[in-house]
Image (cartoon, rainbow, N blue to C red; front, side, top):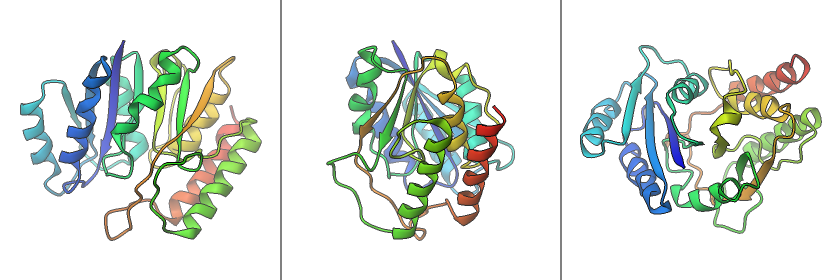
Length: 233
């Protein structure tokens, strides 16, 4: 079994070194692995840092967009390049901890699941407390998504999503920004007999001052994406 770790990046010079080293600990799982970094046209020191990281770790694959396109576009680029049997999405900040990989991968490795979502709201792990209205928006979007997909997810917007590669290959994605989250959920849910699991994860959310990028426009786009990809399958 081989694991593909997909990391979309945009201006993450403060965190990318730490997250790549943390993700590299995936070798402790006993799996072959690759780490695919998609630099979405960063304008800070990120390109220099990931170039140096590549010289340290031959398992790193670096892809770069010629213009900034968004997380969804970066994920599509990474998915196309992935050669693993299992694909995990890893944000480039430090909000999600790669130490959670064993619990995220377990349902797939035990052949119980085809897709696993890491839920920030189904967990007894430590979670940073902040941004009430973000939690309200997340809950509303998850509820609306569930109404269309007939799933009972607690965290549709989670940044931790894991897929068997053959399942991921069955869907064609279009969203360029954060609308990719409800789009993936809708399209995965329509695959016959797909097995979706959730596991609780820790979460260390960051503030806008610390580099958080998602905003109110992304919430409205997610709302649009839920309706669009549910009605027009």
